[in-house]
Image 1 (cartoon, protein in one colour):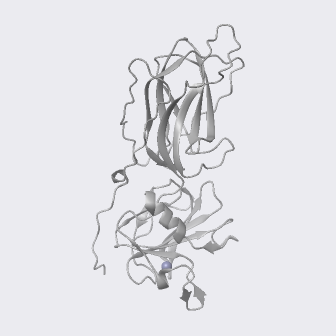
Image 2 (cartoon, rainbow, N blue to C red):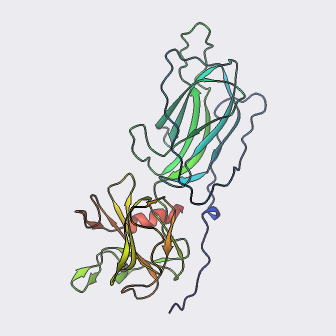
Image 3 (cartoon, protein in one colour):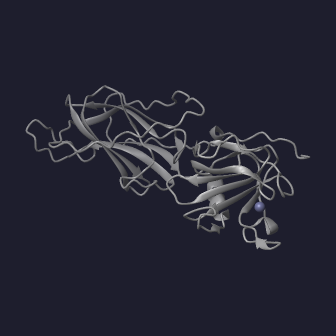
Length: 316
Ligand SMILES: [Zn+2]
């Protein structure tokens, strides 16, 4: 029996991230940063990120302005449903412009670069970032911006007008590697609910997150469903092989079997089931484990997920 009733889940959209639009360039004329964007189909997988492109042999660009620009969504997750996408329209003193578009971290570090050749002014272009760095690794949590600049300020081609170093255009957004898995009011179990708490014959291998039965659960990190089944102790449970990490993520005591099947791809933030008290659970809660590489009963070891859960909870 569930005496706590169902809760109304917090929606992701309720947690606003205000990302400032910073236009580092001088913007003569009407620079407009539009907002909004069309809703995406619910369970559609993310498209691939845009190709990186290659630097132009003889880069050339005029003096740039940002005519219009937007970044959607303002918050996204690695391997999530929607990748950060920049739509931009430049103004320029030249008909063709060789641009570089950098994804820049909060400390000013460039994590990813896209090269674009012969970009015309007053035509909208788009770049979609899949959340990986130039080295192909998942980018760190944090605030980022797209920065548009000429490929080279050192104009060597006779026709090229020298673009100044200040000709950069920047649009901010937040990007996170993980989503908090419980979409609703919750408390972290202490004492017996902590990682490492004694159990008969073993220790507690995860962290309990107390929440009303029926509270939606989402994948903290997407990837591939490694296991989706029943166990007398874990009840209905799910193990996800986290994309871009050797870690595995285990969710137990789900009220019903997860709709996800073994081998299926799951996105960060995707619903995976609801909180229950199946198996040997006492009270409605999520039992959550993280296993280090190479993973859950594949040679890895469970570690205390509470510090990470607290971190994800703070921004989700
Ligand atoms: Zn537990």
